[in-house]
Length: 246
Picture 1: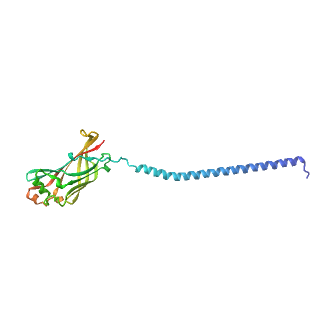
Picture 2 (picture 1 turned 135 degrees about the horizontal axis):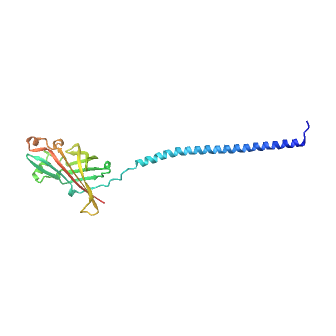
Picture 3 (picture 1 turned 60 degrees about the vertical axis):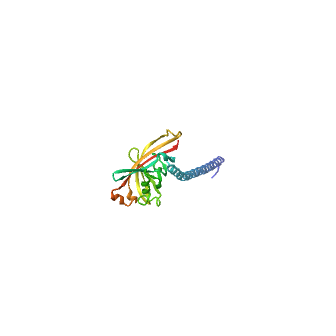
């Protein structure tokens, strides 16, 4: 078969075009592979970031939840001159009144943060005062308080909860003559205001009443109660004033 020059030129041009197309496809394929590779890399990187970020976010949120919602309660200082522990008990037909004059106490109270509120007292038994020294000596003897063996009466709160109105229930442990028993003291919060006599200070007031069975704390063996001389139920009045700087 005879070959003409024109046919050889056309064949050569066709080969060149086909090679060019193949080269172009190869380049396009490489670029697609690189783009695809970058896409996969970015997806993996994003996934890893998500896996790292999610725990960090959780930790951050838990930290926010763990932050106390209330600021620390500022303590009150008990005003001993205007804080008293009064008691009264029946004597035949009369009422005998007395109080304890020497004590220490601590008070943390915030109506908006009862969880961290607390109160405690330590009363020195020898400070009992009924106005008659002979009677006081009898109360300090082992017939009643036995002050030589049990020099302190203590109370430590375990919780304070809101009751009705401005009254709060103070639960705690009262210890008299070595007998520790649960006690519920209803304490009325009278309010807080600027102290009219102490500039730069504020004052808070509390009052509470309850009745104790003295025989439950071994204050007496019941002899005088059976005689009809001294009652077993003792009425208690707790009245507190506390101060702190504004």
